Length: 496
Image (tube, rainbow, N blue to C red; front, side, top):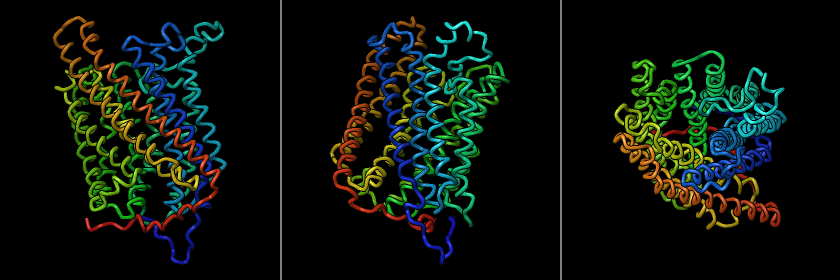
């Protein structure tokens, strides 16, 4: 299942495979964007309980910060953190460096231009274009597009696509040079490089230039969901298939289940997006197809979760002693909850109750922070000490980071899920809209404190990072980063 190297070929040194500086830079940039996204989310939460500290400032209005919150977490935090993890895992897995490290640094800089340009376009674009007469005649908007998760300005989209193409070229080079069967991580990575490019092009160009009406809505729904399922999901699961066996020092329980998970994702996930638009004029056969395929995906994801929990069977003490493993498996538990929730909410019966409610907001936070962000924070918890050649300055702060993040996220998701149910029944009772707003206030207050707990967890992480960096500078190199193991170490599977 993996490229078996010739016996006479010497295993490359870690330093010849991985540029640790770029891994570190990507992670630090990602954490900056995570902080910015959390601040934007807090501003939105305060707005709902009528305590917006920036009330009356047009450029910092809630509508703009809501888009900053979602775009920065997707393209700022997740994308940068994934790129950092890929620069570590792909060369070590394939035993070959990326195509060109100079290209890697160029992509890093170019991608920050994309992210910052998106933020500037969201905050300044509409105002700038409306107040400068020379800009009013432009055939496109400088600001955000009117598509959820596709708010990136029109002038940014070609740059983003070019960046995604360069990423694919840079990482596909070591993967395509391998000989023999490939480990499932490489399958997920290759698929993500292709799917992300196509998904971004579909969502940002077709509704903008080619489609209208229900056709544009259907494609918009596909884009919303495929951005999660065909960009974030394959990269996230691919990294878990790499890091979990390495850290547990044992192979995955079942190669067969890993293939079921990959092909199930590839076959069913692209059909899911229209479940965002149930009870709309989109043809009902497409809505029914989205419902069935969504439930099928949840069954497929269950096989992946079973595979990982069967792998840790007999090594469950690692959940206590190994912090990154605890981050990973907590994310998997949240993934299971997310999928069960999704299988319910995608039905017409549930949609009639919770559509447009805070249930959907809680679901989004559960998957984006509870699953993928926790996986990436676990990877950072594992790699920062290896890059700096020292142990964490404070194990206690690592624990606080984990518990504040996990408990805060769970409280927020549960709170918003309950809020969505209450809101649905308020609306179904045909009471005035204000009744549902007043009834939501207690839930929105809890959301603020849950978010503050999550932010406090990140503060603990930042303090620990800074002190660990200082410790590494003072102590010098105290130990050597482990050399990468031959790929056959990951390829060895159980009998299943």
